[in-house]
Image (cartoon, rainbow, N blue to C red; front, top):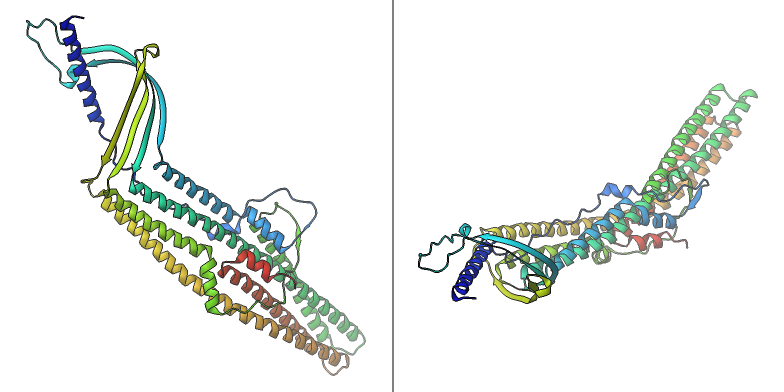
Amino acid sequence: MSNGEIVRFLVVLGATAAASRLIAQQVGPEPITTYQPLPNAAAQPTPGQFQGSVPQGQANPNAIQLTLEDAINRGLKANLGLLVSEQADRETQATRIRTLSALLPQVTAGVTTTEEQINLRTFGFNFTLPPSVPFSFPTVVGPFHYQEANAFAKVPVLDLAQLRNYQATKERDKAAQLNLKDARDLVVEAVGNAYLKIIASAAQVVATEAQVTTADVLYRRTSDMKTAGVSPAIDVLRAQVELKRQQQILLAQQNQLEKDKLTLGRVIGLPLGQKFTVTDPTSDAPVNEINDDEALARAYQHRSDYLAAASAVRAAELAVRAAHSQWYPTVSVEGNYGVAGVNFGSSHGVFEVQGALNFNIFDGHKIRADEQQANVGLTNRRNDLENLRGQIDYEVRSALLDLRSTAQQVDVAKSNVQLAQDTLTQARDRFAAGVADNLEVVQAQQSVADANQNLIAAQYSNNISRVELARALGLAEEGIRGYFAKH
């Protein structure tokens, strides 16, 4: 190669390198941080979703026996609220993994074949050389081609904003797991309420059936006495009206019982159309006495929703620190290694290593806006936590009051049922002896019916107060099984 050709080659090479630098400058530097405000937490199930489910399996043509334990286990597999909470937990895990990926090395590889021609005038190279120069300056370089096979690595050495972001997502992940446990408690509560409602409705049906039988006996006896001429027609009409009234009440309560069964089926995901029977889990054993302070301490220790809210506050605090950390420098290392040449047969090893220290000088107040947004989220999470603390205080105290009151109501109602039965017995004896008409008997029967209804309502309220106390303490799964264990 002559000296003129060498000079010409070096000029073209320099011009090409200059053009490449101009292209790189047009592309611009990468952002100095990969910080992004955390997305909103995954949507949690609504209260109404805990009354729904995804039906499981096919209906059995025969009625199945369903205990409270069986119903709870089915609900924990099929309840819609729990299924939604499980998916929210998975979504939060995905966010945590995505945030972690920004802190880990990124390694890629690629093989390229390039065919290129460059117009130097595009980049301002438009020289006219004197005639005495033995060569001309080209305005077009190429076409030329080359092939490369490279492995690329990017290692974030220090990025405090992303590190704080990742720590925040870990707290959110913890909160999501606690919300999932709280969702289990809500399912147990919903199943317990629905199951106990069936028990109360079934008891009302049984009590009303007994009243129908009693009213029918009175009607027949009054009719016989009228036929014998010892009772007026008004007594027969009065007995017949009472019989019809009790029959009407019975029909309404039987219908309500079937609707209550449908409600339980929806909560626990029974196959559509599945018939079932229930067993009364009511226990006469009193709940161990617990004072308000001890109950509240236990609730704050075990309530998953409260612990989740506390984790959400910690996540919000870390999000504030992440936003502020954008002011700190970031350090990263990038590099690649491979082979390059006109073709792979004549290739040679190539590599590049680059370290970068980047920091913000002026960003148009973006960081200030990120900090303000993060602080708003922190304030909201703290308010949510304090509101939940007050709600737990109310729920625990209310549940304890209901439990103590309903236990006393059950005792009073049982005594009242016995008194009403004694009154009915005396009224029947007086009617049979002819010293009173059947109005006294009808009124005594109504007193018995009212006393039985009051007893059923008191027992139902006492059962529900046990469920609500277990939920208020954050021990729904363990508590309900303990409160309704047979002794």
